[in-house]
Length: 323
Image 1 (cartoon, one colour):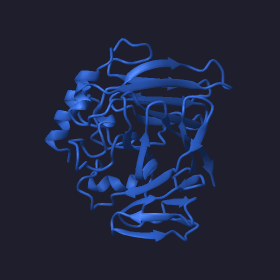
Image 2 (tube, helix red, strand yellow):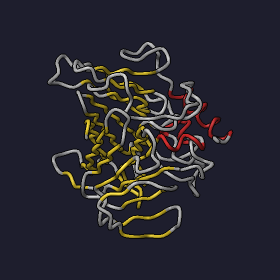
Image 3 (cartoon, one colour):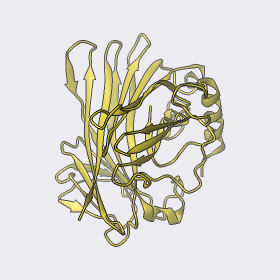
Image 4 (cartoon, rainbow, N blue to C red):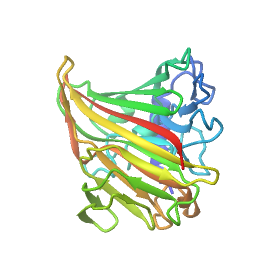
C-alpha cells in the first residue's frame, strides 16, 4: 500500500515538472510509444520515466515486462513494475524526507527527443530529462540533472541513465534501474537465474551476507538480495507455455569527467520477488507468481559526483526464444 505522503509527494513533483502533452512523440496521457521496423515496440510513461511495456519482434503483442494489475497512468500513483528508475535513494532516508525508492519514479520527466528508426539496421530512441526543482529541494537539498536515453531495436532494449550535479558541491546518492520481468509461473522452477556465481550478496530478508556458489538458481520463496560488484552478464531463463524466453542483461557503469577520461564504477545487481509475504510490495499477494525483478546499479554503497564529473549507468536487455 502506498502511504498518503507518497501521493502528496507525487502530486507536488508531477505538477511542478509536468511536460506539455503536445510534445512530439508523446501521447495525451504522457506516454511515449517507440516502434521499430522489425515489429518490436515499447512504451514509456513520462511520469517516472517508467518503461512499462517491451515487445520484441518475434512477439510484438506480448510483453517481456510486467506491472501490477491495478496500475493506472494518472500521474499520481507511482508505477510499480516495468523498468523503474530509482534515485536518489532506495530506502527511506534518515536525513531527508525522500520517499522510499526515491522521487525519480514519482516525477514527471521532460521529453528531450523521440526518433523512430528508418530501417531495421538502426534503432528507435527517446531521451528524457529530470532536473532539480523547488519540489525536489523540499525533499533533498541538492541540485542535479538526470538524463535518460532509451533505445530499441528488434530484440533488445538499451537504457542509459546519466547523473550529474548542477550545484557547487558534491552529491551522494544511489541509482538503480529495476527491471520487472513477466513470468508465466515462478513456482516449480519457472525461472532460472545465472551469472551471479561467486558474487557476494546481502540477503535483506535474513540480514546476512553470503557468497553465492550456485551456477544457476530458481526462486522458491521470498527473495531480496543485493549482489555486490557483479562482473558478468546476468541471464534469466523463463519457462513459457508455447516457448521459453532467455533474457540477458549486460550492464556497465562509469564516471566521466567531461573530457575523454572515464573510470569504471562498480555495478551491483538486485534480485527480488516478494512472494506473498511483503505487504509493501506494489504487487498483490497472488501476483508474485508472475514476476521476477532483476535490478542493476549502485546499491551496496553510495555513489558520489562532484561538479564536472557525471555518473552513467547503462544496460542492454536482449531477449530471445530458447528451448
